[in-house]
Image 1 (tube, chains in turn brown, red):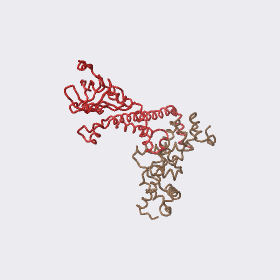
Image 2 (tube, rainbow over the protein chains, first blue to last red):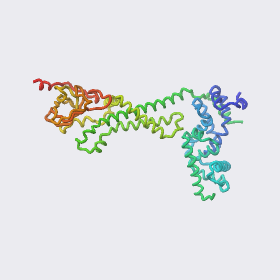
Image 3 (tube, chains in turn blue, yellow):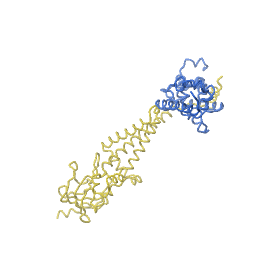
Image 4 (cartoon, each protein chain N blue to C red):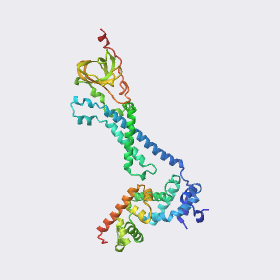
Length: 194
Length: 259
């Protein structure tokens, strides 16, 4: 029943309602979000592939158990990203690890996004590589990195970020602003000329 | 193939995992709202009693005491009610922050809202005379009453010119009466040459509690210069505000005036 064809054309919210009646429909939601969430977890964490898979399972199972708590005023994507956010945060707490790995291609992508959309780094792309950016990001607090990832890699709107990290939109804007300033300061500290 | 998806679906089926029922979430949300409302109510009641205590803090007799007004204010502030007010404002704020969708608003709105609710509803409670009843109730609660400022002590110092108690009998007019103090001792109160009667809104009659500034004449006679109501404000209950119950033995001085 729940092959790709059956899932198509149905909104997330419809699939939530259907999943409450039949777990098979939940497969549609998981397929929709599996790679997005895996990438998101990877982007904000230093977790290994195995850890990411474990976290992903935890996220989907927690979401399934709490399906009746899904707030219909939210987008389903915001809701499940929030669960992923919470799982990653508690994973940090358990392992006392820091979320600090974004480099290589991801770094380049983030760099491009930040540069294009926020226009704060100007021609930074020409000067530093994604690898260097990865090192810079290691020095940024997870709360700043997370909003950068959500805004520039996950392409989330301010309202969605607010729903995911459960902070007011104004605070999201402030965090993003501070994150950019912190990046700028780090670039200066590293002596990178722009 | 979506291996994780299939794996999770298998787990759900094998372990017969089901979504938690909706009522559990509704109950949790309801509890958050209920605790928020309850905290706001208790905070408001605390504010009303705090107001009541401040209004009845004997500011008008500070000039008769050996303390500066500032010293007096700090030593007599209703700290218990202030602490309770802060505690329940904090609790209301904490719970409100955990209500669904609350994260969309800045924390200061919740702090301002909690304070505003306590002040507004506390003032309404005060205006409707709820505060004296709460105060009386609190004074009857073991342990808790030990933390409440004992105002009565200040007025059990007849030798320094301060006396308060409940009028048990009037001997003609309203200037001469018998009074039982909060230790249960009976006094005859007579007006001094400079007697200042109580404010017009206050009627001296049997059963009301008064405080007086004057001079002790002997073991059971007090010459009053100022007679004032012991409590003022809405809802002040005649003779019952501090849970004081006069001992039997009233009217023993009547014969003095009948002879």
